[in-house]
Length: 319
Image (cartoon, rainbow, N blue to C red; front, side):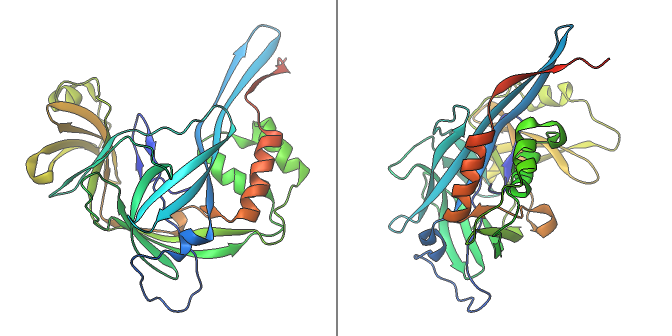
């Protein structure tokens, strides 16, 4: 599971941010990424929902999963990082959606495209033995550093597979204590085999503040319409900004602690957007098991395939 840098109301864009190495020799490289040569994988849970209905006799609980395993590739000629996906549960197919990233001076367009190596995700910029710097993939071919991730390797041999699953599917705010498929894995005490390794994120630095939005138009005709329809909580206010030398405008709901929702006005259309500040996120805000090696991912894939299903389970109605 990669860190979700950009998350908005309609969809999310996964941003790859891990690398592998030792704590020695931090000399940066620019065109040869040793991390992507070694083969690392992650799990994404794009849809994960539960619905319960009462038919008068039983409580019918429907579980819906869309779980996939991703494999990443670094094209040394273009420095494009792409990924392909394998559907584990559900009906995930490889799709791409056009999106935009606006900085103070630039508007970067990420096209909806699938190449020979999968979906282009980012530009590789440089790496050390314990960090990697990447930029937003864009059709303008502007290779600007956007984030740096610092990491460390973690031996997860003999660790419970359910511990890693809990982070992956638990991040979808689902109550794992009542999930029969997760509990099946947990109660079986399935463990990762010897040689299993994970990438743990230690720090994630966003190098430039930016606004992100998909090419999906919101129901609002203007930013004023958005403000009129949005109910502010106590202590919240609208914060307006301009991007890409004035070609993009935004309005965000800001509280004392964070910015929770934005819209972007571009080319006379209003889009839902997410704001990403220039900041450093530390380990407590990041994933412990962002990426896995081949030994670990094979064990995790088998556990998902053997134990997770999209189905309706009937339980006796509580008296």
